[in-house]
Length: 301
Image (cartoon, rainbow, N blue to C red; front, top):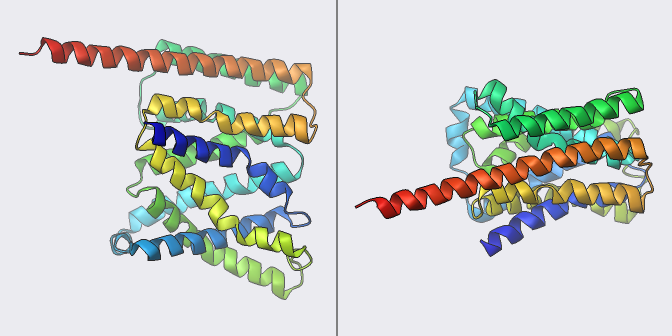
């Protein structure tokens, strides 16, 4: 349990500190950061697969066009999510981006209802209703939808839905997704270099090195997350996940001094209340089910 908590926390802390990495890539266009992330992620994951001699799953994938099509869709959503997040951080919208990952769990619950026909408990419906009220307040107070947060939640929630129904594990699935994205990224980077439109060559050597580190920065937290998820209850994993957007929010407010007026604070407060209700209700149901299972076991002959 303890090592599982450590793995999960490391994953969420790395994701929470990701804006520091993106902000350090001075002078590199968001689209180039995305392309480098796609290329070097595959290189890093390929090295892990080579070290583990774990390539047998590729033969099964090659003979399953439906599986490839499903992961092509998840790769497209992942690509969109990555680009929007990189752009938001580069445009000094870290606070807005953090909201997307606060509401993402509730968005994923709604996707489960719509596409997997899951049934929600009253407490879950209440938390979703309060979160919707928070989003409505943010829309009214700002005069526009919090589109960055909603788009991030939609792309990552849709990605999670496809991965939940996919047949590959974390390492294999991400490897296949980056393999599908790799040709597009490599050709796009090559075009930018050949036409002189790239910003990478003009960047400082330290920035160029950080671009090469895009692979580990992408893959390591996902591997930590997968290791933690196997060792701790889902309810605990759900609570720990708020460490990531909390760190992002704090960085946006305290380090980069992004505006966080009272009107926006009220909208965020409603969403935090909804998340608290969702988390507490989930823990209570989990504890009740566990006690019921123990009682049934004790009463059995």
